[in-house]
Image (cartoon, rainbow, N blue to C red; front, side, top):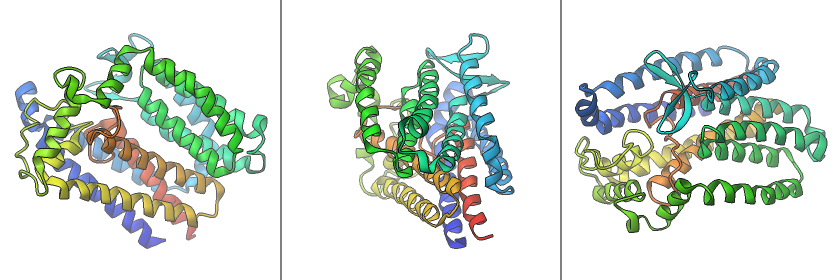
Length: 362
């Protein structure tokens, strides 16, 4: 599987390098105007990138199967951190959301750690309970309890996007493991009133849905981000305006270097540049799926599927939001968007995926 590892590593490096260039292009003027230094976000991103690479190499240096014995401690640690971040004075609040730990000049988002911890825990559980997964009490319900605790804590931050992402990944893993489809369907029915309460009864989330349905109706209000994103993509045409020549990044499109960086890619590099990003993620998912298919070890099989699903879903959601196919979620584009915790743990996940592939050859 060496050729597959080389392919995944190459795609990841290309996306990272592409992201470095686009982050500086999208944030340089904003950072200079607001923070007095055009390279502010670029320097922080490179620092997180270095940390992520070091941790990914560390993960690759060990046998991934040794991580199984730490699945429960990692899960417990993630729960403790998700509880601690909600405590005033410990967790940092930004725009009404308490999602970060402040460590010096840098912030850490525990929900990103939780994504990887959940993958490891659920993969270990499914590997141990393969013959019981169709039984509700022994195979399905225990995972459901853990998932409910994690999602409730993340929703308290509040962060609906991450909780939905984690829930979707876990449900996909349960389906792949052979869980009874009736149990999954029953869970879906139970989730409907919860989704109704979390969206319809929460004004700002309901407004996001309404803005998604017709962003131009509220282009000067809640739909401002979506309309500016579409203007950016439309302005780029096929070949783009040229690298660094985006107009929408000049204080028109909020979060241009984070959640909506693909819109700047489309404006500056055109349809061809945006398609290149989409194709790279498609290659990543395809090659990751090939690793999962060839993995004999059950733990590695479920873990590789979870990693590929996590990165693939984040890419699909971010791209969908940027082009107006999905309501705004606040999820960055893996490896491309500016973002500390997300970048670090996505690199750790890739390190695990490459590790799984390497160990299969031993």
